[in-house]
Length: 542
Image 1 (cartoon, rainbow, N blue to C red):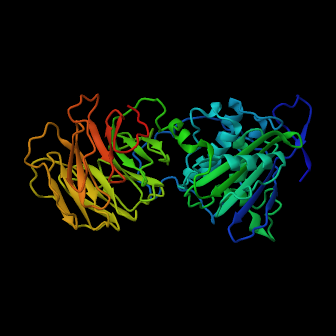
Image 2 (image 1 turned 45 degrees about the horizontal axis):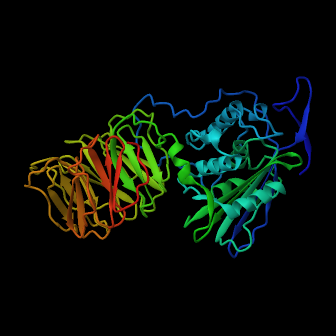
Image 3 (image 1 turned 180 degrees about the vertical axis):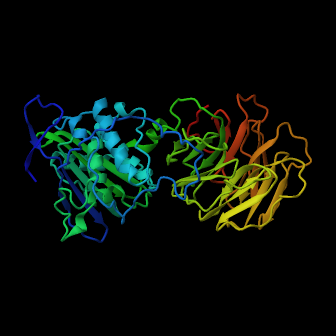
């Protein structure tokens, strides 16, 4: 473990050798009731013969042709699967990053991001895009962010926060150049931990843990005779956590490993509400595609709440997704050429993904949202205007402006207004809690119920100040709300009225609504403004 290699690193004088310990990493995994021996790995990154031009915070290049809805957006390889081979850092960021001290220089970060992008390319994943406040984060916070970015791009939930107790344990691990473990008394059901030394930036550690940890690397627990320790660090980063909640601890000591930088992280499934000092919700507003003070480049068209109401997503017509509260950003279509604008969003039942639907019926799935088919590429009499998911997330319905229904996955077809005369176009859809029915709503407030969806009333035939633009059912399906473009709310059944913006002058029209409980709802305007009634406000763009 203490071998010394001759490595050409940033900081070495021309014509001289810079001696420093070889980068080292270790990993440890524990599960309640199961004893797992620690992984001990020694990594010697190999140099690349060619260096690609690094780039930072660049959105994915626009497609030369309209994208075809994918079977899975941003999934990659998940445990127990692992990459087929190690990927050497290209460009070799060891030439750009200091191994003797913390190095957050643009050259180091850019080179490492490009190497990570090359590693991800083998999994069909986009490059890592850092939050815009990356350089204002502490080294420990940066390690927390980079680990979560590896998880969320593959559809895994982000670690909720950095728990103070776990940070203290990780700091001890970094100081002792060892794998941290939760302190005695800290509740856990499973946890994993990683350590790395003699790397100056957490992105370097991330690369070695994720992309250069298998057979043929310097992982001494990964051999042809015993491959059980291969990709152990990657497995820890991508640990399947229930997240009710899941917390992280991170540590950094500038001279913790034989006088060189030392890093440690601890990922834990815990319970209760441990004290935290930094949370993922403080990161998401600064992720590209999220709200961080930047203006919309296309109008907002929809909103979807997380299952527990702790956050919500806004979606814009160009496919940009904006996350607030505990809503995790699982990527978006920002910067991608679309053949038709996005018109709606629906969350998966567990809140770990979402679907976007375009006016041509194209479906785009992110996080753990599955792709079950779409109307993209098929002729439509009228454009698609909305989407609703089935209760188990194994299917969804698209609804068109003429009331036509298109069912995919386990979504059943229970009838539609397609081919029937309408006074006004259909503008939205809501499903019953058991998925055996749905409602369509028209812009005049007319309600059309199908399957086991009960009719609780409508504004059809009543003169409205502004057209209805969306609807939302109550959790038990015994009522629903409709919202008009002026923010007026119409409640039916057991849906309670909690307030509205009707009669208030708005900068932009309301375009959507969402709710996760019966105690309130959120309205979204086309400028990204969010109005909350009876429920917490988690942020907005407008």
